[in-house]
Length: 124
Image 1 (cartoon, rainbow, N blue to C red):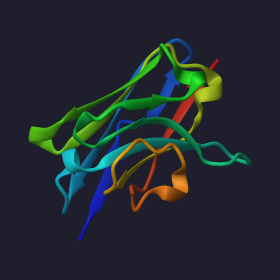
Image 2 (tube, rainbow, N blue to C red; image 1 turned 60 degrees about the horizontal axis):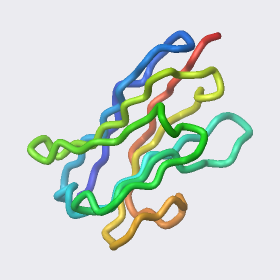
Image 3 (cartoon, rainbow, N blue to C red; image 1 turned 135 degrees about the horizontal axis):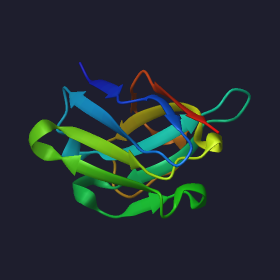
Image 4 (cartoon, rainbow, N blue to C red; image 1 turned 180 degrees about the vertical axis):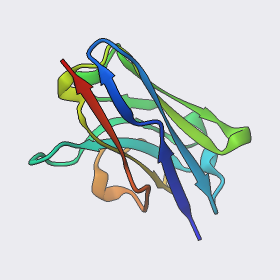
């Protein structure tokens, strides 16, 4: 059974940082494309940052360029989303997702496996 478990969300002031973790079980994470997505109340789910399998390229949303980065720790089968210079508009539930296909896909409905989400709240 494939499981993705996010952690690291919380409440932070504007300008602060958080690092989200997504730990996988049941798959070798490096062989999967991974995406971080977010959804704020009343909004559609949107892609934030996606990385191809075996670190084959990265896509990043314009709204987070220069502030968010993604990294993998293959020994821990974990992917991280480092979020710096957070803004109130970054407030959302953040999800990680995985798909066993080549390329980089920023469309949430193209992913096979999802975590339960973690809440990020940025106060002004």
